[in-house]
Image (cartoon, rainbow over all chains, first blue to last red; front, side, top):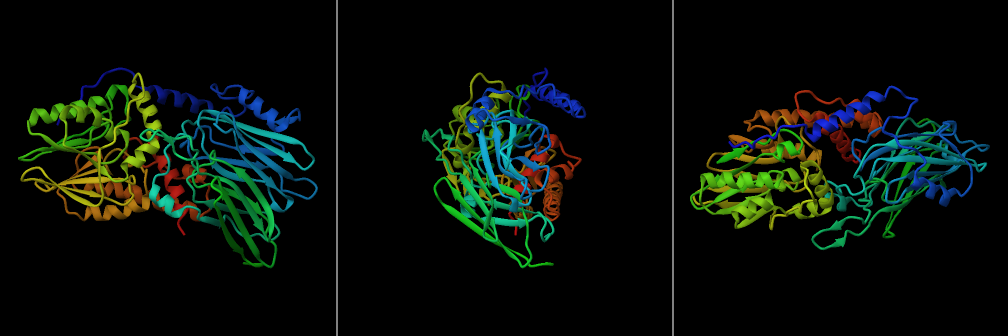
Length: 285
Length: 271
């Protein structure tokens, strides 16, 4: 056996461990920002805010209309779980009609926009995104009265957009376009019920260059997802490759007695369409 | 037959990228090298080690899979030893091409290099089973369905009944899931049934059967834990929080939660 001579000294690993411990030590102080959290008034946000909302006022981080679930630090920058959480059920009088998910430092900062209706039940959406750098992540909800409400968190993760493509390229190609529905809880007639739709798709950005051919791996990503219940659209999403591989969305719908169908329609950047249907049981099942 | 056991650690300047296992086998006619470590330094060290023991030509350098800690020594090793062939499983070039920029940035940062290194790719690929004869000594190469990665390659030395498993086996170092958990568990059964005398893992000390037991324990618990979380409609975040890191392994803080994420993303597609 041969061993390679060790070079003594503080390793990068020890330094990084120390930094991680420092961040963890700050967590219990919930109300204060962590020491490494930069100002939320970023250059990127100023540009996006202007583009999407011009001069309209935006309630910032009040937590009364919408909240954002995001990890302090992501385990995997290519699969960062994000929750857009409404504070109240949708009602005909007051409902969230649109939500934007903005990631300041991603190559395409407007990661997704979701359109919802009173029939959605709740405006909550959970999904997974790619983060390229440490960044502010924001949800901006527009209520039916035109009001804008933002919730935001600073998330520590890096390399998600340029991260490795899928783990099993052959299997991914074989399964391309498969759409799966799941009910994530008990069916509650007349009450918002949680469901999930997932699409098997590489969701490539087209920003990876193959060093051998010097050509860019062509982009191939899901750009639109539409979910309907009983023939009425309850969630419509415009998305791009900021969403993780195999786009996945948890959403609510309101089952009505007599049974009906959940249908999903998915369109990708090559104009391929995929769809799926789930029969939702009749009253009592 | 000679084996070098790398450190169970992340690649860093202080270990010069020596964080994986490699070895070489000497026949009557030529030498084969299996894996190359994670840096120019390890590639050079491997070349020096070969030349200390044999003046025979090197008929092959075989790379078990394309993760940088096993691959990045190839340039220096091939430069020093001029192997007749460089071999890897069929899907290695595509996997490396997809991740090249990430690997370059990672290696530069971890090893403290001045610029991102070129990522080498073995010239020749194999699929299925192949035999290399070193002169009165045969090596059996075999590729597998997706397990640790989608391009794992093992090497079996008939003379000593030793299996170089690459990262199909981890000892001490927590197994890292970067392929398919179901496939890895399935093919572990085949690997264990091969009846070899000893196995050289990709990380950690050489083992008889006990290394396979420990890995099977972890991966099975991972699969069962994630399936249970999915059955109970837990979100990804909830599953990661609920499935506690196991004891008795190194590197769990770096890799366990990532493994749970990978397993969850895979198993949520099970019907």
